[in-house]
Length: 182
Image 1 (cartoon, helix red, strand yellow):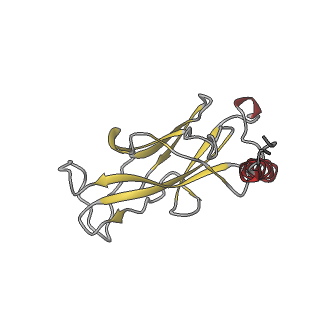
Image 2 (cartoon, rainbow, N blue to C red):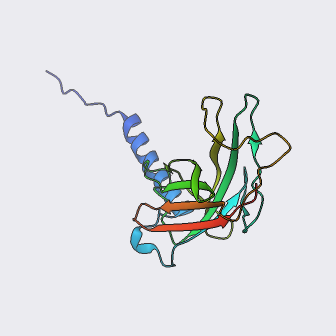
């Protein structure tokens, strides 16, 4: 009987080594995700609006209402935050919970009911979230929401406001309120 040589399959070993190098390179280029202990600054939150960037909202600013072809209406919000943990940055599905509530005459009028959302890095070192939509009127509901008409707006009163609430993965909670004009 002759000696049989075992053939090693370099393919699997090559794949494992390549994945290890790619992972190390990604961590070196992007940095490791922060831990809860890495948070240095006091948590803060700033309300805004925009589809693709961040435009801050000040008291009394008008929130543009977007009308759909089937009678629905929504507003698109954005936020900037600092001193909060942005989430797992793609390594798992653990992200901050963001709730946007719109009050009319101190009564909850519309809400996104809180969803986990990934925060993206902003140019100034803070975190941002854009395209946060809050439905004001749906074609499927008979809500008693004010009747909007395209090219007009709802007259906001002194007790109409937006409240953004963010809870990060470390348990930090921060809110921002802005008086509204629609």
